[in-house]
Length: 114
Length: 113
Image (cartoon, rainbow over all chains, first blue to last red):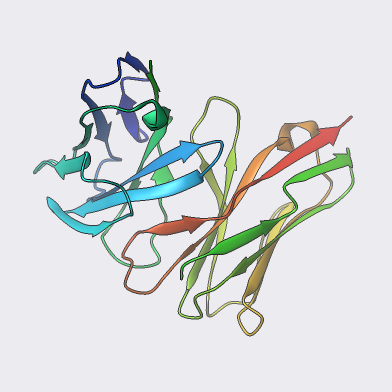
């Protein structure tokens, strides 16, 4: 069974640009969550989608947005990139959108803003 | 608010020794406590988890204990091996948070041959 797939693996963008990251969850998983990982702030929750609906959102500015498609694939977008957005962006998928469900992570997308 | 404290931040042991990592959480409504291992260049890998109705869970050399009264849980690795070297994260899921996980800051474990 294929794991969580994130594309691209690496990305370099210029300050002010926007970027879109993609996540394909494990087959059958309908919940997708996104996290930002930085050395200073650790792993921080961005948002979670289930059945194409955002159910929860972390404390990030409105420049960070996401969506989920009918096949459960998800994308996240960051507009007007800032240097501080440089991070590893991780996607996690879960079987059903319930509490206490195991979350499986992808390899992440390493975003560098210059 | 939602908070998970993890200690120690770094841990160095000799191969064959045991390693213990401890986490404390703030929300008494938390009911799911996973542990993740992250190797360099990879995403976090779920290694073991425990739910609030269980006090201890074991999987070969790995065990997790939960004390809901004191609001802390711990990861125990016995007979450590060099391949156990990685960063370990504890996490908790709060009520009403759906699949939102709150992570500890991580523990860098080094196992020396």
